[in-house]
Length: 462
Image (cartoon, rainbow, N blue to C red; front, side):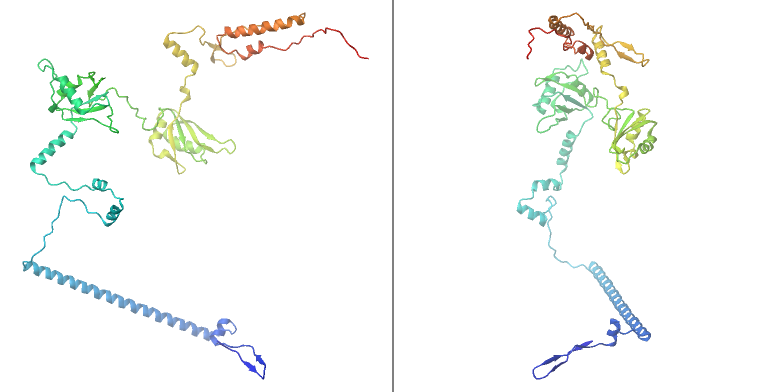
């Protein structure tokens, strides 16, 4: 398509003509000004097909060429490898004396630093001591004598079957003090008359004195060669060292230790028939909890805390089982610890039915001490609830209020003063205990309800 602009000029005037656009047939078809005939449409499609065939044939030719090049390269590599193998065989068959440079390798040297480590070392960010501990140098080969010495030292540092535990040590006790104590206490033993033996410093194979923050923990382990030596040192228990009496026991004896409950690892609370379930989803329901935990035992009741307005779960619940076997099985099972894609927190709950009331606890403590008061708690039956027993309260005399009709105003103040004194005395005679509300109300001071006769002169104004 091309455009031409024709201008006509006369003497002093220029006339501009509109642009004339000349379009080809293809452009006019694309623009939609001229409709495409069926023949032109068929020719255009055939031309497209021929172009696509040419392109696909060119691509195939290129792939074939690339494959031929790769095959030729592989053949060349195989030939080169075969030539190298032939040269090696010939060299092995006819060796020639050649001089090689000797390389010295220090097997005891450490690992050389990498470039990154060298840069960090220049900046002062690398600690060589820590690096040496992390990558220690290989141990050198030892001679037979040195190896024997090392084996003896390892035997000394290893634990022995015959050892004693020494407790209640002073914090300034040292290994030398323990050795000196054992040798000195056993030096006067007569071996002929007893099963005990004398001990020397060479009989002690190992002394382990555990420390924390450069201070001993207060106990030590001492190893010996045989059981007789162990029994001899155990007989020295309760002997003083550095101002403290030592407790010495056989290291394999664990007498006196509190027995750990088998359920201690499952929960921090004591075993109970109630299971506490925490970290529940707000969408949890009682039916879902019942279905989830019924496999571990017989459930009596499911108590789930809910919000008052929405009725949804607050996030925790209590499940009452028939016995302790149910909660124990749930705590041991991995299946019980997940519900609605949330990990659950399971613990033994508190069984309130096993609680003892405070007044019964006080009564039991009084019985143990041997001092039971006469005014102690006594069971009283009530008509409302048969069989219910409650502690009786000490009865106190309540004074009835008598209202006189013929009292005078002069005696009113005296009566109220007497009442106040009586209530004060009653309070003091009660041994400092707080009065009941009914007693306090009966003895409380009240305003006078009497009619006081008028006295004095009556003045009238006209």
